[in-house]
Length: 230
Image 1: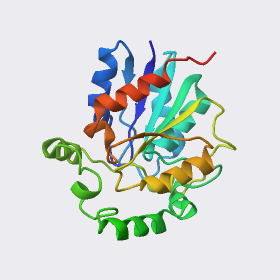
Image 2: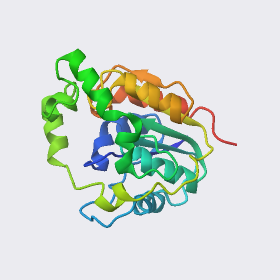
Image 3: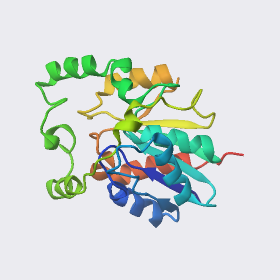
């Protein structure tokens, strides 16, 4: 069986993954979903990766999964540990030496959101988190998620260049959410093609897919663990 290392996104905690973790554990897998450092504006991307590596310890057969901003941390972890797969879930795919704060402009995010908002009447990029992030998550669950929000990532991590010369050479997958109102689907398809050179797997869900479609997401993640890295 595999060890799934589930890395949360901006403002979040490991709890975000609790429903997916339950599905994976029910199938016999080990699961880690650590809380990354928060409320420290001096923390670097390397500090986030350090926290994950420490949590992993000597576990093997790793599938490292990064949600949204967690893609930056997940890819660093996959460069430091032997992993069977690196998975981006509605994730930010880094470019070498790119500060995370520059990712938005470099990928053309702002224009993509404006174009999609014109098509859907302003749902995409909406200021209301229940519209932009949690539109397909049960209200009570969405409120629980919002009550756990923290100051993560830090200003320092957003300003510092991504430290790798290239993304790690490991089997890499991408799960794209077709109903995402934060990262429009067409936008992410282009980013994934340009930065990873792969075709993403798609799921009918919004940005917070681990809360809205945990069983379906767990099934996709399990499929990536079928062929361990030699």
